[in-house]
Image (cartoon, rainbow, N blue to C red):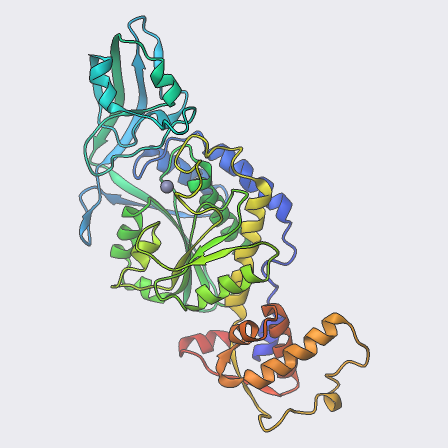
Length: 453
Ligand code: ZN
């Protein structure tokens, strides 16, 4: 089988995608996951994985508390049943059952009576957005607390309050979900998302939904790369996975951390630590040919799990794709990051763009022009169209670019970037030139060439 037939047999990943239907289905999935109280460990996380398992056959891993993972330790498992602050009339003035953000995530159990003054240091609000409940956590320092709308705090009278957090923090497990879609190559594309936030939609349920639908879409397709999907608790999850899979991590050729993919804003792509990895170029190329402004930002050691994947001991080619960037939209980490804040059309668009990026990775190859001394005569091979048209002109231009740059050093993605042409046009031109024996594939990075030939 030649490279050209391999390429022709492979259906383009985004082709035929019903973006609107996929967006609506992802929004519905987010709606189902929204009420669950998740944390970095515990039954809320397991329940979330169980729901995702109805979409894709992911494997659930349980890592015991106390397991050493590099410089960290898998924490004790947190579970919560109920939490409230009751006034002296027995009315719940703060109620976990109404919104799970009301509890400081990872709160240790408490049951006590106290004055407002004693309670006050344990209450968190957002005076700048007085109707929103903030999201606060205390994973690695034992604490308890409640979060509430600032307006509600201002209305709390002096009283004797009953404070109860019915939680447990005990030895248990850290759970995570993993799913590998096998391609021809053992080289992998990593798709990682954190699944540890409670009722928050853009950060992080949008990432979960898009990752699950990507996996559904890739399953059963003839692929070059294998695609590894991780649904993990933020920070400790990626540290745990990397610690348990140090050897396997070497197979990761490209990767994306996915989050904040459901809001109506334009895309923000945070580059890998390498800055010029193939994934960085591929994402910038796809976003650059879309119809909306976007931004590419350089790597920084702050953000999501790319911090761990791009730590110097791994330095994986993993970037982070978002629409609005964490911390830079007011709804971030508040109750306003709800089902209205995420949009089915935006989710569908995010899914389509990532599939386009994968399409580039799947087909990016380097070729050698077999007729490098002056241009080959395309006309006598029937490669110049008799009639005109924009697409025909673009095809001819793409052939000239591919021929000119294919000296064995430039990949098709390089050709696309330098020519300003869309990757698909460059790939089609290369397929055509291959069929006319004007190009030969250059073997790439050992094992990869086997899977691709
Ligand atoms: Zn977050």
